[in-house]
Image 1 (cartoon, rainbow, N blue to C red):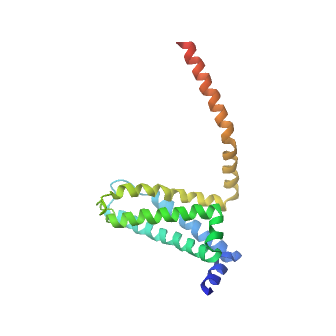
Image 2: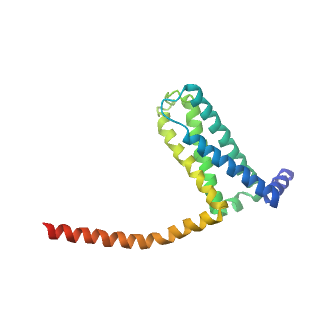
Image 3: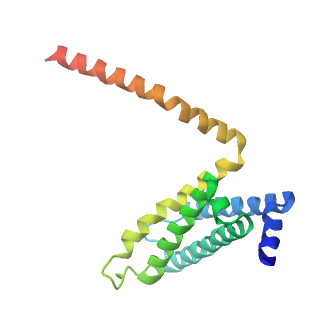
Length: 174
């Protein structure tokens, strides 16, 4: 219980909670920028450095999830939609990183069960979704995305009308 009280104080406290969120958001930005610098045929040393950086960022996200689960309790942690999203990304990150490590850190060797690590490396795309964590902290961006989300049904109606129009012109053109 004492560790729960300490982590609850760290996460729930206004300044430290904001500091923790700012640190994690900084890690998200740096992680996405680092992923953007990867390219095919990069030197092995750069590839290894990227992989170790990804392991480090994965550990940061795991520590954040553990701190929040310890502070709020698992049930209260999972009630928040953003925390469920974070937890899913942490689990997928652990699966992706463990497949990479078992596969030999970029060596391209198959896992003992016969799976190719490249299948699991496709899970890396979910790490890009961490950028969506920024939506939680940026109010204007959140409002913009909510507006876009609310306008999608109207765009579907417009798309149906356009398809109908193209169909009519196709029939008339026959």
